[in-house]
Length: 495
Ligand code: ADP
Ligand code: MG
Image (cartoon, rainbow, N blue to C red):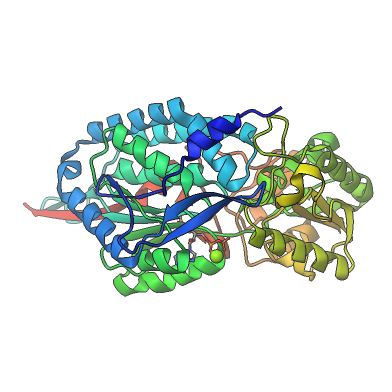
């Protein structure tokens, strides 16, 4: 059943070229160039977007810097809390716009909007609370009586937020919440593949009463607009989510003015199933650790380690769950798996699938692009489960960012921990067992920012998320995240 009528889609997109947001005004880049964004379910053009230039980045940064010293700088913590709560209410009220734009731009099933909406609102409300709970410490130093010291927390300043295409509105909100709570101003760049929802969020920020220049949005290719942000002397901090390769480029570019840089990068997360696990729960969990969003999730549990006694039967079960998921038009309410985001991503994922086959792995399910009926023009890849994968194969080592599980057989705890950790990444991980001791032992030994036991991908505004090793720097969500948007000042008072 089509959830959204064609007229509503037309209305949501409109005919006009999509703008940038600088200093509270929606404008076209003076460069005059535009780029197109495509619907990955059909391969057709969705909209045209103004392409910001380095000069526009300069203007956005200048506006953000003025805003720090202007009305926004005078906002009390309670005022920042109030606008964040208003923004949360507006996101609540207009979330249908955001999920429709994301569904068209990225291809995520429209039904995935329910949980995403709850997360976005909860996150903004959580950080609204944090806005009134920022404080330094009184430090009883060793020279007490002679000199007194305390610390103050101040906003870091202008933040450049660069986000990927795999969760357009969710990522934007994840960046805005802590930055605004801390009192920073922002230049946000959505991914060039999925720019539409950020512009709507920009409108809602203004409607919430966030002063002009506090939230600015620029659009365009990463190597131009993103790179101009990463190297900009007027930006104090970059918060980046995306690939490890781009994260490295940003770190290098940020060296010029020693920007603070937080990075949420790639992963190749292990998901470990012991033979004493609840196998039905684990099979569904293993499939859902990868297949939602067509596997375009940085913490997806793509390396599935299964204990030998249950391996064949279990992998078969995971494949069955994969096969049961309905692939289709993301705007259809029955759809569980939409297309990949772009033709480029399709080519990349299919080349990994081919490499798996040619290196001797066996596709127990999926493995071929879907080109039937209405789906022919889109970038659809079915849930794919590989058996007989060896640790040194390409599909065992590299992030695919598609609906592909590589499964492995293991015997002992020591062995599986060593193999699970033998990667340059360290973002997510999963453990499935009914043995409490195994659950704790393995959790403590995995080198990953999150360990999910008998669940996967649980998230909460209050719980830190982030990567070990080459999966990143810093944490998002929780009290940890806001610290990255604050400077610490130590004040000494001679008595
Ligand atoms: P992908 O390769 O899947 O597009 P990226 O990590 O390259 O993932 O993209 C994530 C975000 O980083 C996007 O907004 C993109 O425009 C931006 N980006 C890409 N290259 C650079 C770069 N060199 N400097 C800054 N941002 C970049
Ligand atoms: Mg790229």
